[in-house]
Length: 395
Image 1 (cartoon, rainbow, N blue to C red):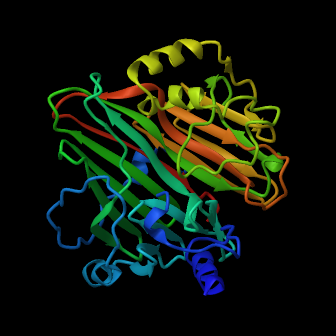
Image 2 (cartoon, helix red, strand yellow; image 1 turned 180 degrees about the vertical axis):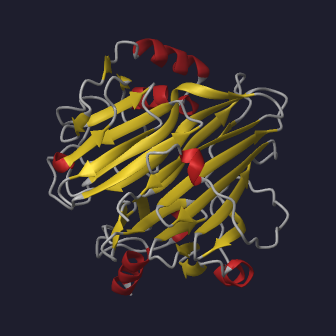
Image 3 (cartoon, one colour; image 1 turned 90 degrees about the vertical axis):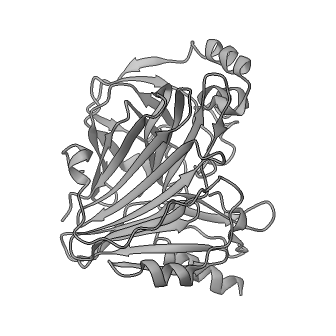
């Protein structure tokens, strides 16, 4: 039974999915462009499935999903559904061979297999499945949303994690678009998460609407785990003269953290709770947030001097004026991918370092489109949009 579940997870998610054979699966506790600007990657679709009223969805513990209902109402347009435990996999597949999978209700994009010039495909995302504290499967990596919404008075502190499929558009010839929605418990914050698969790109766009009478602060990141042969053979191209802050890696239920990172040299004490509280102040009180902000002013600030930046060292940087798009080259796999952003002023770059085996669980690089150092301010009755594009230049 366990072996069959493991094989199912491996085939559904991605070829770089690392699953211990002892994993037990129960999804109720699963945590969870090309060099042009990303805005050019968001396209209108030709066909449209009939719309359904937006349900009021609170971020509550996951409820079982009726994947048969989803298959009946939303299949077609190049999208199929498969039930896995209490969760569901939405698979988007284009005729050119590009495939992306989304785990519901967490909204985690677990796989993006991009079509290559030689006729095959290559996995661009890195996903890990491990056994959790209570024997449940913990799925991490991929492309995840890690956001918190809060007012100045602390009236609202909400992190969305329970997404509902609202619409599917497009066709398998050119592009497929899946729209997910979410709302806070009092229906004052509305979210749309739109994932678009194109022949040469995977786009993620978040839309936030504020119906509250107070301004809303948006903090967080769209975080990508890009699979590589090893960080030792991986380079970031195009970041020269970009300013950055050296900051601790932020905590997320989806981020893959190397073992014993708090004790290893390089990261030092970056995994301590005070640093995490500074980056994501919703985990502490307002006074704690102010104290930690003052205490972290000594963190290193610098300017990127290398246009061909090696990522072999342990790295956790927030760039404040990086280009809207840059390229990650993996010389080990002889592959490259371009990552662009829209609506975000910051870019997060994380490398676990090269002390691990090649093609292992920790052979990845994290790139995040972020609002960490400076939250995004959204006025009452306002709407904010931000997104990213992972472009495959290898067709």
